[in-house]
Image 1 (cartoon, one colour):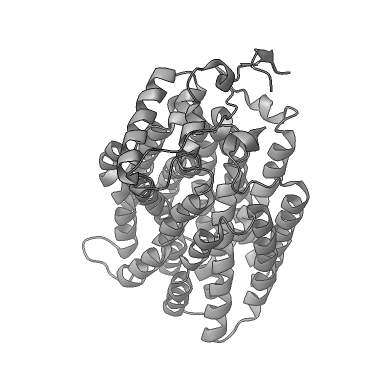
Image 2 (tube, one colour):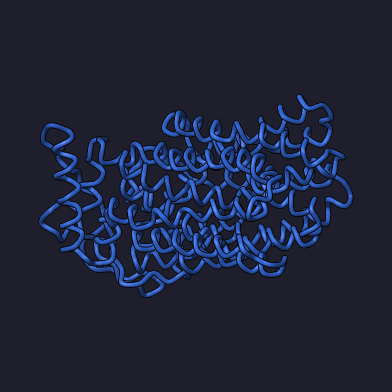
Length: 467
């Protein structure tokens, strides 16, 4: 790439900073950092936000089963409740997630955490089904944007050799919220002390807001993002502070940075995602996301309801779901251990195919051992798959457009979830097997589209992946 100005087909002017700046680019300085306590403190704080995100998303599976059993919601209303949450996530992902390319990663992360906490708390005091559905939609706005910002944020702060593992760590901590939600549901849902049990679950889900300002004080803005939007002096201050911390913890001088090409732009229109450089990646993710959400959320949000429809009591349904939920952290833990060993593209293809095969066996499970074993295996594969694709999607776009690219394409998964939730509710009338055939077809589609069109990304600097 040349160092002079050049104009892309959409008119956005770019400049290669590595050739014009006397000092190395921020991206190059991030990439050369050794892994020290700074990175683990950062990931711990970000993962705390992920924990409350996942708790909020997956608690509805257990709360929904109780609400249906008590008569507070019917099957159609439960479908609407899930769909409303995903509709809110679509808005949050497509609007506020993309907004982090304009307002910054830290600001967006903290703001979205606060938004979903406020409306989750409001939902805990909903007097009727309609109010609960509306508050879930508004809480979904914060949740949808948060997940986009987490993937983007971690990808930009952590050096390329470790970023897959660190994104998987946020998934690991996040999915630990599922057994916690299942345990709390098992304990609290039958109670009616001051509030109904399901309301206490929502109050606990809203606790993320308590940690908002504490988290904000402990994390820096992404210097990569600051550099990409032309805020060079601020990027230098933040990066210099990170380097001082890392050097002190490393106990020696930092390695010399290598040359990386960094492009800047005042604005990044969505249409650029369909330009010659990123078109194939954008189209791949636009197909990938509507399909993958059918498999992951189709099972996670409906498992207790599936069991109710197969004749299990509410008590047995919650008990089996709790046992299945206990293995939720195993999938992302495998993601942490294998993120840099297995090519992410290949992992996504294999795991999506395994999800399709195991899912088809679930409707035939009758004994408690069969239900829990097959459900647990599906859960492990699906959350391992999740840790792989969250790292993968954030690698495919340049820093200046990362949240735009991820938010625009990931938003399709949320929009898809709105319709797939309604489809699952309709198919469930015909039986659980019809739902799992639908889910299996979707996951085989995932394997096909990523296997054919997905690029390889492991251990490559983000700026090199972008080019």
